[in-house]
Length: 201
Image (cartoon, rainbow, N blue to C red; front, side, top):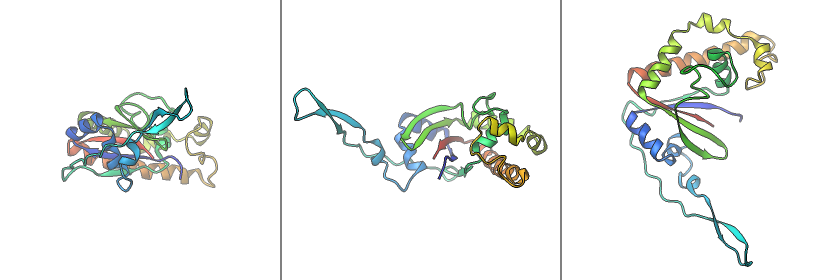
């Protein structure tokens, strides 16, 4: 399936709750999988063989539900376009000036969901508004001009498709379509005075 980045809107109150109890993020990001499955962790135990330890399993505590308000919980799936969008916003693979580096940096790390999911990062409502305002200051024309398929390939921008397409315009259109989706999501989120979670799946 590859690496995908998604965003989810939350009130600052729920952002704080998720930061305090990272397992709550599991219910939000992958609600169809029981959260208890991810909070169990190996724990050293005694082995029948003297002097050796075995890995035991700590019994998972039930993970509480997170109550969402009517205007929160909206998701935005950037699919595999996230790294290309980061490149258009910052001109780099993994660096960039905040807040436009928000897809790969910044915010407050919530924790690691499991070995197949990267760390979740949380942004408050004021930080989310700053992201939206900075993105809004960049015109689609300016962002299109930043597209450089060879440079993106040289910098190993994921996924490795930028010089493989018959038409580079197809790759650029893929990024711009997802950028439009991201811009609309951030506008709606900022207007509702909500924060966001950014997560890798």
